[in-house]
Each structure stands twice: as C-alpha cells, then as structure tokens.
Picture 1 (cartoon, one colour):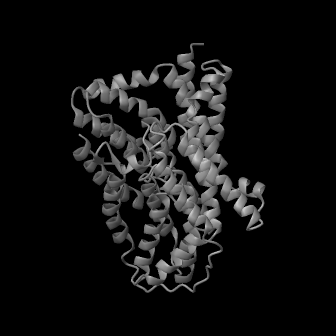
Picture 2 (tube, one colour):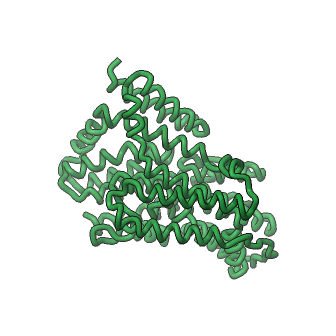
Picture 3 (tube, one colour):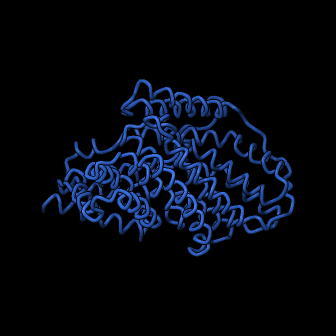
Length: 422
C-alpha cells in the first residue's frame, strides 16, 4: 500500500481513538507508530529521527525533579502559609490557584496538580465543602501557566524544539514581549472568572499547620535548573541538545539525592514517574513524523492558506480558534505537533512573521484543553482524584468553569499576540 495512504490512515485512526479511549492513548500512540514501521511507511531510522530527544530529555528530567520536589513537602508547606494568610475561603482557594500557576510555570502540569491537590482536598474536608470546583480550578490554572515557559508543559517544549526557542525567548523574542506576557495577561483576565465562581465563600479558612519541610534541597535544585536553562540558551542557540541534557543531569542528581539522603529506592522512584505520558510523546513524534515525511502537512497548509486567501487576520484567527475547538476534545500534544509545520507554511505563504501563527497556535492548543475534562492530562488526573474522593465529575460541571475560563484567557492572549506580532 502507498506509504502516504498508510500514514494518513494511521494518523486519523489514532486521533479517533484518542477521543474514544482517552485512558488508552499511550497504547494507541505506540501501536500506531509501530504499525508505521512494520508497514514500511517510514523506516526505523526515520522513526528514531522523528523523535525530538531534546524535548524528551526536558520532560523526563523535569518530571524526576518534580517528584522529588513534591516529596520534600515544600509546595504543601507554602500552600498552608498562603491559606493561613487568606482573609476568607474564597481568597484561600484563589491563592492556591495562584500557587498552582506559579509552580506549573516550571514543573509539568500533572506533577503540579499532584503537588497541590492534597492541600485543596484537606481544605475542602475541613470546611465541609465540595472540592470539585476547587480541583477543576487548580487543573485549569495549571494548564494555563504551564504554557508560559519553555519547561512548563510538553506543548511549550514542542514549540521550543520546533522553532529553536530557548528559555529566555519565551519572555522576549526578537526584541518583542513573547508568550509569557500573553499568558499572564490571559491569567489576569481569567482570574476574574475564578473570583466570580468562588466569591460566595466568605467564611474564614483555618488550617491546623501539619506540613513540615523535609528538605529545601529539591527547591534549590529546581531554582538552579531554571537558571541553567536560561543560561544554556547562550551556547545552544538552536535548542538542539543542552536543555535536555541539563534536565536529565538534574533528574539523576535528584534521584541519587533521594537515595542517599532520604533512603528512597531509585527503582520505586522511577516507577512513580509519568511513564504513560513519556511513551505517549514518543509515539506521537513518530505518528506526526509519518504524515510530515509523506507530504500531508504541506497539503493541509495549502488548503488552509487557500481558505483564508491573503487575509492575515482571518488566517491568524482561524489558527487560534480552530486550535481551541479541537484541543478541547483532542490531546493538545498530537494536535500541536501536527499543526506546527502547517503554521510555518501558512505564514510563509501569507508573507507574515511566523511567530504570529506559532504563538497563536500554542495559546489555542494549550488553553483549549481547559474546556473539557479530557482535553488535558492535568484535567484527567484532577477528575481521577475527585472520583477517588467520592466526587465524580460530569462533562457539564467541568465545562461550566472550563468554558468561561478558557474564553477569557484565550481572548486576552489572542489580542496581545495579534497587536504585538502582526
């Protein structure tokens, strides 16, 4: 069979199964990538080269360090201080969301939700309130701020690897304010949505201090990692190897620190990591590489460029809000990986700065996942924790928070990027 037909068929089937079987997405991704190789739609060498190993290094290394950071209890300790300083329950919840956002800018979203969730659930139990809205707010806050930096979330890592952007480029890129400021503007506007949702909780929150920091070393390691990632941009301008290597080195240091200081088992520590998402990313790189190598990316780009003609604003708007709509139901990692080359080709055809379309694509794809409980990994994890506590989350209940939060955040970021980068 024609490799072009095989690659497209595998890609479309994988997407359909991602929607129908959200909890089996890794199996689907790996099976799809294996099928491409077995049918010789792409060679084993092409599959290997399709994987962005720098991004994989960043993801795995940061995940290891995040797990040790969580075990140190520093985030939980900080959260208790924030709750104690809040004037009422509403502001305690909002401060927890702010803490979630801050951590998520530097730690992978799923790890962030796992770090903050115990504090949110204990607060809800003490005050005898339903934790559902609070956990949803934590998940969407994590997804939002994870977009702000290079190491915050896999989609940001994908964009950084594709556009060869370094850590500092997410703040200022080619002399202009970059993604970080677009996300923060979106966060400021969407924060008002959360305030409206939780403002009825006027009672004063009182938590008995229970958390004791086991060690500040993981926090120091995390801060050091962030600084080194910023410095690495000066000698690895192509974002080809340094960031991944640095993150892996810090991950290994964190593992051995846990082994010798906390007497923790390295094997058990490795088992606790999010290997599901890790192998999912590997599979996605290969599946998207398949349609890219067989020419489908250019076909889609030509079609979209034909639809928008010479209207740059229509092209930009289409990219952003198509991304929002699709990523609400499709995992943003495969969607973004497939659309990045499309955005570049469209930008070239319209003779516009590629950053306009790339940044708009990242905002739409990353924040659109906040609309539904299956739109992002952090949402799935948060809903799983709630179900375990006896609070199953319905699609409608999640979307009551997800839709207004997403529209507020995307709308503000969308306008910011347009006026800065058009």
